[in-house]
Amino acid sequence: MDGPGTAAPDAGRGTDGGADGGPWAQERRGSLRAALAGLTTRGRSFLAAGAAAVVCAYVLGQGDLLRVGVLLAALPLVCVIVLYRTRHRVAVSRRLSPARVPAREEALVHLRLDNVSRLPTSLLMLQDQVPYVLGPRPRFVLDRVEPGGRREVSYRVRSDLRGRYPIGPLQLRLTDPFGMVELTRSFSSHDTLTVVPRTEELPPVRLAGEAAGLGEGRHRSLATAGDDDVIPRGYRHGDDLRRVHWRSTARHGELMVRREEQPQRPRCTVLLDTRRAAWAGSGPESAFEWAVSGAASVAVHLLERGYAVRLLTDTGAPVPGPDGAGTDIAALDTAGLLLDTLAVVEHSGEPGLARAYEVLRGGSGGGGHEGLLVAFLGSLDGEQTALAGRMRQRAGGAVALLPRGLREPAAQEEGEGERLLREAGWTVLPYVPGEALPDLWRQADRSSGGAPGRTARSGGR
Image 1: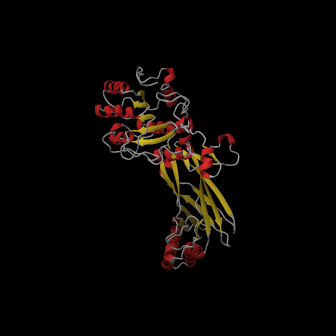
Image 2: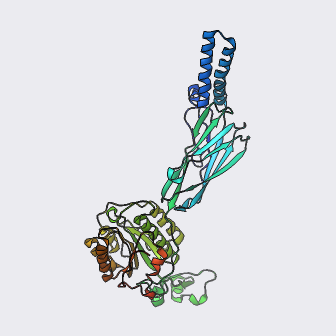
Image 3: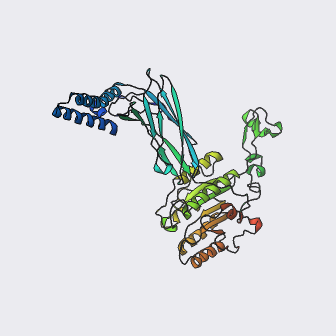
């Protein structure tokens, strides 16, 4: 939420918006020329009509017309002077709910305006700056805010396109009751709305290469270790006395207990092919956007099942990085990090998957990452298909999702690539953009015949 920013709409030049958590700032008074520049079309029309009436009255010698002309010309000028001398100090804060929202869903933006001066405000209009993809710019008219008063307004934003969008700064327009003058002031602070890919709830399936019980069949170092291999810790209130390690207690001179068994978390790498040459089309319904949404769904699903998940693209940059790939990061924090990364992922200019392969085989500081590999691949030529086949050697199980119809003639080229990947040990799931991912994911279940060499499905549902 923005810290309170303040502005003093007193027809001065320039603006000062409060920084987050900073003190209230009041803008300096500018010249009267700046206030005259705020005349609206109505004010300029009154001024022009008054000037014309004065000239005509002088030429025709009509005193009554002269008084009318003076009145018409004086009204906007009086409004300028009054608005110029009026000083208001207001504080505005903004809150996004939520700050991270899936594509095609709405987020609520709350605005709060506080009048911190000793005088009531005149007519105010608030306008928040938002990108066009989030919808039209919201405008609110506040008739009068009493001294120390507060007004709260809200509006909704929605985007079909993932990304990170700035909201703000807020513009404050001060007008007179006759609509003759309109002065605009801006605050400097803004917020960022992150639109992440949409995720779908996937059914739990047993994948090829996955140990039964999600890690229960994996080795447990403490279960097979002898007394000399046990790493004890100090006794804590409530520890079972049957876990006391007497040899370490005698060595350290204080009560020591054996650590709890810690099963190793199963690991998974979600590989997303972002090469520009591998995808056709653009927009929310394109195959690439389907793959981005699919990668997000798979990553969140496996995190919920207890996997240590990392995201890898063809650029070779894993998320979390090498230091965090195998650590016990909170699943919620990891999911947020992965979704934030996928919110801004774009096409790359990489010629192939070589960098991703180097990370998977332990190069570029990525370290070996045995476990499950789920790949969302674009169009593959013979060289990239062979490289993807070698990736399978670094994983306990591998699932590849391949789009159909990106190349012509599609059937012959794609069918050959699917066959080669299956022969390399991949479980291949061909799809068409827009296909339901839960139905597709269910076909990777090894207990229902989803073996790497299964017969290819015909594209489409």
